[in-house]
Length: 114
Length: 109
Image 1: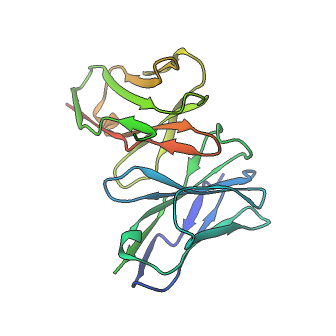
Image 2: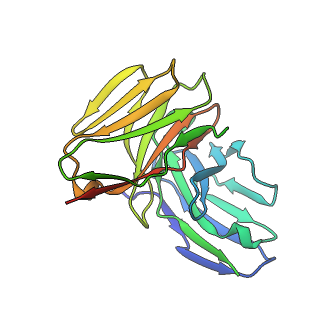
């Protein structure tokens, strides 16, 4: 069974434009979570989607947004890129509905903003 | 005050010893607690979950939860060099899972 898959593995952008990161959850999982892991910092919660709806978002500016598609895959969009957005972006999935369920993480997208 | 706090380490233990990792949290109503392991350059993987006060054992790992004192710990018995990693404590706070910054564990052979 395939795990959580993320693409691209690496993304290099200049300041200003948008970056789009993609995530496919484990088959049967309906919840997708996005976390940012900056160098030396812990995982910072970004967004949680379940059954196509945004259930919660972390303390990030509105230029961080995303959506979940009918097949439960998800994308994270980061607009007006800033240098401080350089980080590893991790997607995780779970069976759905409850945050007390186990999260399974993908390998992440390393975003570098130059 | 950070929501979930861990000592960043590194915690160094000799091979075969017991490694003790600690975590405190601020939300008194939290009900679900998790320990994830993250190897360098890899994504986190779940190793333990605990929901009730007391101890929960799984192989060489024991998770301990004390809700009154708001701390959760992870004991690793017979530590192996392959246990060297960053250990992340995660706490369910409302509609999100909050992670600590992690403790680096180094097991020396």
